[in-house]
Length: 158
Image (cartoon, rainbow, N blue to C red):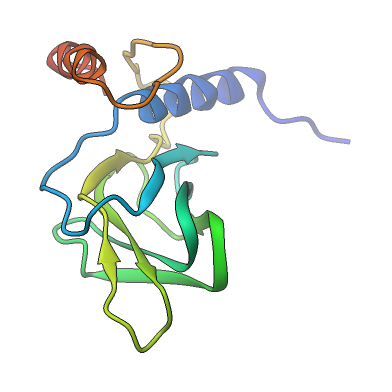
């Protein structure tokens, strides 16, 4: 049995921590208060990422994403739910993407969009250096927590 390179796994886990801790909003939210838990990222690799979020009521979820615009690509999971999980694949290594989550009460209804966020896929070069800071519980989005996020973003992390 071949085991994955432990250094590579350690680097990917560290990179995932960075991305889950520092989500970068780019625009204001369009719809009122439908998201119970803002989008967060898991399982970051060179070519894929899983985006998860929770809504207050049952919605069909979709993620819109792209390098230059969130409208370049989309992936939907049919069926109403409050816990949403969508894995994006075939991404480019070491690349920053914009994304937003979209919720549909039904497929004929108007979609409700989250703010636009960013993520960066892991680099494919094992020798590349990654800098990061880690913060614990993201909490409920108080003004103080956004101040901490802003300080982290100014720190020049990947």
